[in-house]
Length: 320
Ligand code: CP
Ligand code: NVA
Image (cartoon, rainbow, N blue to C red; front, side):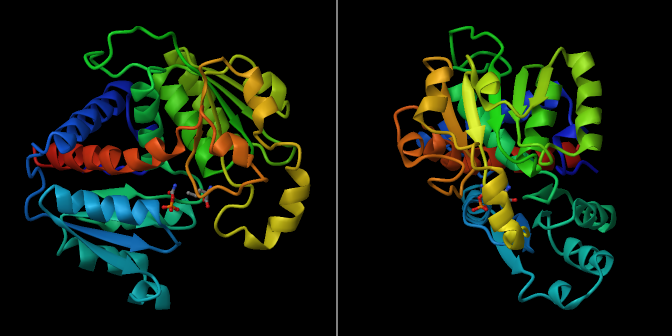
């Protein structure tokens, strides 16, 4: 059984095959020739945290592919009242074709997947946000910064991209680490001291990087990270579940705002990405978020296509 819990569990060919499929699915959607790849399939969507993009893109995505989604908020289901994950997973997976889960500790989704009889997709955990990274890479491909697998959509031949991630060493940073380590590009993470990515995840990604040729730099130097980068990206300073640390984080991160002066250090054709929701005046200035280099709304819309690609790929893998 293949799940989609972290990019660590996928090789380069598989990641690029899903990106290719997502690009194809997007084209079919635009041309109104989308086959019903998941006709009569039912996706359960377990949310233990809030969401706008993840919920809408999965629910609209499964519907457009001929299936349907069931929104399962922990405020409404027995999981939120303490029913064990292993019981919930066995029951709901016996009635569904696929499950997406957004949760806190990553071990919760691992346990869910262990007891599920159908594929489970991570729609964000405290440690990872892999579906977001698939949309981000797809956006890089569409912007001519990275290559799709078969290079059939874009004639140009870009160099390996340099990605600068500015800010918290959180689920987004960890997911960038794995994407970079698997695909072999250059990633520079600049975080304030004490807010770097988790040491264990970094170590594993660095090991993988020795095989793929990826280059990973971690520092607290925002300017060095951004110098010549093709992609500049950031994320909120206080993730869901860290609301009580907002004040101390605002103090610790105050020099880590991506503003026009930061963008001026990047490559002249650099794009700005942000998974959203964004906090203007904190991790990014209004000017950058709304500026000519920002691709955040293309990135957000690509969640729809990237996740359709993931769902169709998983369905194909698991019905071989
Ligand atoms: N980027 C993202 O996952 O957004 P939501 O929290 O709105 O789903
Ligand atoms: N790091 C953020 C991402 C939100 C999509 C969080 O976990 O809240």
